Amino acid sequence: MIHSAVNNLSILHPVRTVLLVSVMLVCSACANLNPLNWFSGDEEVNVPKELVDFPREVNLERDWSRSVGNGQGDNYTRIEPAFDGGVIYAASENGVVTAVTAESGDEVWRTRVSGTISGGVGAGNGLVLVGTQEAEMIALDQFDGSERWRVLVTSEVLAAPQTDGDVVVAQTVDDKLIALDAADGSRRWIYEATIPALTLRGTSKPLITPTGAVIAGFSNGTLVSVSANNGIWRWEERVAVPEGQYDIDRVIDVDGDLMLDGDRVFASSYQGNLMAFDVASGRIVWGFEASSYNGLTQGFGNLYVSDDEGHIIAIRNNTEDVVWRNTDLEFRQLTAPVSIGNYIAVADFEGYIHLLSQVDGRIVGRVRIDNNGIRSSLVARNGRLFAYGNSGRLEAFTLQQVSL
Image 1 (cartoon, rainbow, N blue to C red):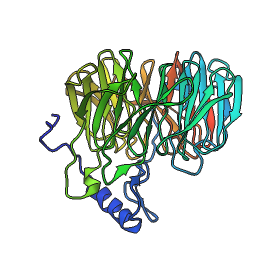
Image 2 (spheres, helix red, strand yellow):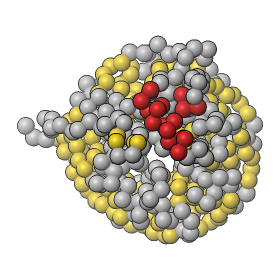
Image 3 (cartoon, rainbow, N blue to C red):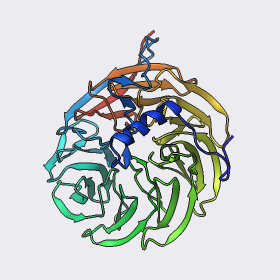
Image 4 (cartoon, rainbow, N blue to C red):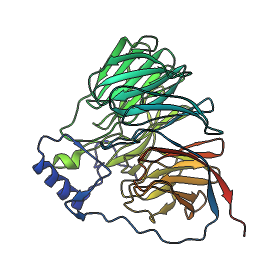
């Protein structure tokens, strides 16, 4: 049962709390925590489950592979590819941005921008968008990769900027939502949220709705809707409420990507909840207690989420009924789930892609693509799965049933 706004919303992790408090004592200046690294010295606090054999029902057949710079690089980034109009756009930390045809893997264009890319990729309405560690927003021409404009924002951009062709919206690590004119990058408006004492390193990417609203989640556990045109506030609701004596217990970031489903928007929070809100009014229409720094997906009448412990949970839509829960990938630092055909796909810290049946959650397929792991969310379009490994390999797969 989801907790009400006045009740306890936090899921506490005592072992993790001790670890992260010790990290804070060593580095008192640190304001952001990496949610994918729960280590103390040489000892792993939460040991990832070892993979075991299973009856393979589906093969992931590689269609093509491309190299994109140094991938996620040496910093903790989660640069993600974007799909638009049959083309995949990808970027690397060291400034390589490329456009590749989704069907064949042929390169449409490749360019290199100055700066260290930390957020991206956003694509659509003639623009390809990335943000940098140096607090710059860069817009490239979607058709030839030439630089259209570059502007300074308030701080580092860690998630993909979005555009509707009129404005470009980006969320910065200092919890500001900034709108720029799509034509020249001039500032249109800015929305500021209150920053907690301690947050996870990351932000969700803002969502622009067909009704002209920008919806964004913040590190204080709130979801906010403003007008895309002028930034006028529409509504604000809580996905989670901070509780606990220590700052680490009060971390409730909304870092997973939001999901729009008709007149509902879904959000997830760390140490909080999965929630659905009415897009127009912000009214809470559904909720489920869970802790996740990833987004969610849907299929077969279910919602699917990978929680902070690496459990993949299927919840019957609009109910609190758990259809199934898979714990075989516990603490393997999973990406957000994506649905493809009859399956759910997730990737992990060792570079494996796992396929699970949407019916009962059993693992039915697996392939490894990058020994350095996968942090970027997978992309599923037109029956094909796209994966971007930490080392910079962008690969496309189709699913093939195993002959009995």
